[in-house]
Image (tube, rainbow, N blue to C red; front, top):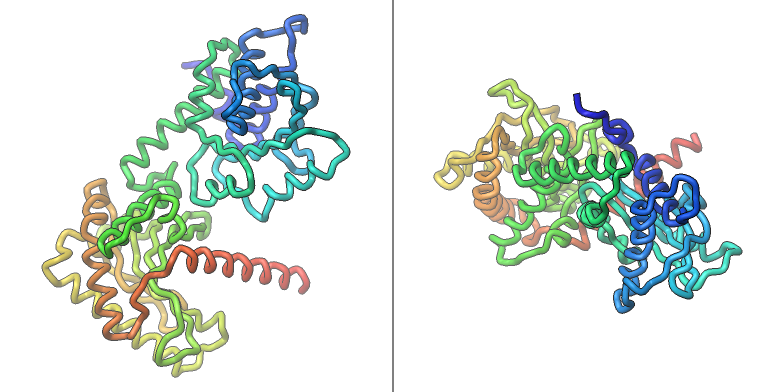
Amino acid sequence: MSRPNLFEYATSELSQDAFLCWLIAWAGCGAGDDGHDTELHRCGVEFIRMLYHKQHPEVDQDSLTIELLSGPERQREHIDVYFRAKVADRIVSFIIEDKTGTSHHSNQLERYYRSIDKDKLKEDEIIGVYLKTHYWYPEDYEASEANYLLVDGKELIDFLHGFNCSNEIFLDYRKSLDEYLNSLSKALAYRLPTKEFSAECQFSFMLELVKQLRRVSGSSVTNQEAGNFLRRGTSYGDPWTQLDVFRGRMIATKEILETIYYRMDVRKDRKSGNYLPSICLRQWAPLKEEGKDEERLVVAKNERLTRYREVAKKIEAGPVCRGLNFGEIRNGGKGDNERDIAIFFLENASDVSLLLKELPAFHIRFVEACIKAERLPKAQLTPEECRKNKRDELKKLKNNVSAKRQN
């Protein structure tokens, strides 16, 4: 049996907060202190020096003198890691927002700056650091817009490998992060969602799908731009990732707000009986939520759904998309808000490659047929519209929560 690793059990963001505080604290542990570890002290000092140099790349990093003045503190004004240091002749307050699997939210980054700016302690500068060791989503990169430096898992592990520390806590953390990053890299290269990396692989796959769909329409996008087309969440604890294709009022019945979208999650394949990753093309028309379940609207919605399904079936029977693994859709109830149009299952890595290659052909034919038959808008949603939809949904969710609290 190999030596147990502390961080196989301490896997939360709070455990990573503790490690960062512990490492920074070693910067203040001098040669005369009890239990002094020269290499850990050097690592702590260099960590602070690295963060300062990222903010001021014009300064000679090796010439910077570092003195830890106070901290590190956890949860000061709800900040994950806070400390003050004298860097050369400047007093600097450091804010570290530490993340593993989650992302920033609720304007927390801006609030932390304001809380430190308003305290009674004097400093020459405040440096914000957004440190995330796990998979990065588009919103993570937006932390730079709030004036935070970005540090990812690869940058941190590369830094830690620059020190020959023998301390078991240090070695355990470094090994744990190494193993996580290697496993994530392999999973993303395989692309088929796994139990451990379901959400990350879903999002990575859908990013590539967005790029493929944009490419066949004559445009290109970066990963970060592609991510703005996507939404993600969980249903009963299981992750899903969604790409909206159309969103707007039905032409014939303007009372109904309709969205056509692809959603990736895990579904039961009725042919094999197995639960498999899938991409499902769906119609969303919230009759129930809007209180518009009159029979005429239900009929109009379902007539439109039937035409969508007929288009998809016609493409499935044609010669273009023979390699796609079409599955059996769930019919659902006629008054359901959400209904399947078509579904594709992913059993292995070859299915992933095939879907990325052939789904754009299906998509183009489906969209062209629907534009002609249903008078849908010709363009997909723009990234700006997708971001607005995300904000609107978040606002609606907050309003619902507030209403429930009041009741």
